Structures are given as structure tokens and as C-alpha cells.
Length: 135
Image (cartoon, rainbow, N blue to C red; front, side, top):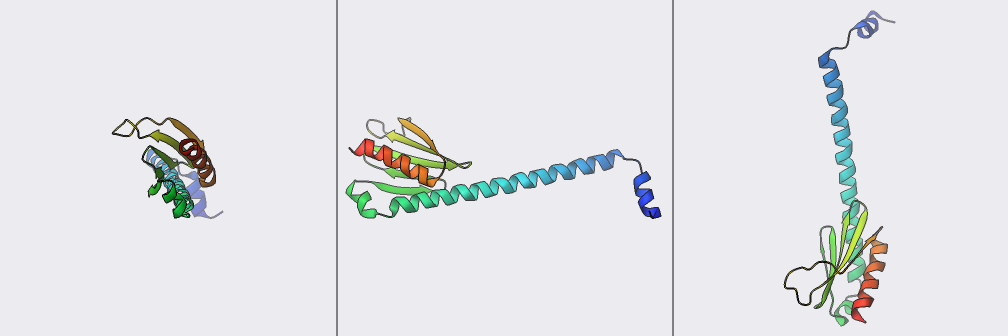
């Protein structure tokens, strides 16, 4: 062992050392959390884009049913004169809701809500809600 190593080992811990160690640890945790949040947001955005692409793939179907598909960042919606089906991607889940447009000039409380695991599952839920409304 060199004299320098012995000196580092023998040096007593100070408040400044403890503070700097804790500060650095928390900074690493903060950066890791921010990176995880960034990755999750990217995945949520990717899911919204995939769902929107699946919905607009058959424009003739949408037009024949009087539907308009739209995407705003993490939310994908299908609008009809009587209802709106919306899918909101957040934290790796998809909240799918059906709201009635009849009688309410502003957005109403959803009549039906469900949660999907991914874009494919959300597409299935949207199709179920759509069948119930269009029948």
C-alpha cells in the first residue's frame, strides 16, 4: 500500500464529504429518474402514433361511418356527430373512454372507460366501443 492510499483511508469523514457524497447520489438518482421518464414518454408517443396509424389506415371505412380520427401528442381520438372515443397513453398504459356528444355542448363525463396495455389492445377496445355505438 502506498503512502497516498494509507492517507486516504486514515482521513476522517467530514460533514462536507458526507454532504458531497449524498448530493452526488441524489443527482445520479434524479438523472436516472429523468431518463426513465423520457424513455416512458417516448414509448407512450410511439404507441399513440401506432394507434393513430392503425385507425387512419382505412380512410374509406372512417368516412363511410362518419368518423374522424385525430392525434394530439399522447391522445388519439375518433369523433362522430354523436360520440367521441379517446385513447390517452400515459405511463405505459392506455386509458380508453367513450363520451356522448348528444345534449352536452361541452365535453361530458365519459359513459364508459377501460384500460389497455398497449396500442393493439386499445384498438380492440375502440372497436368494441365503436360497434356498440354504430349498431
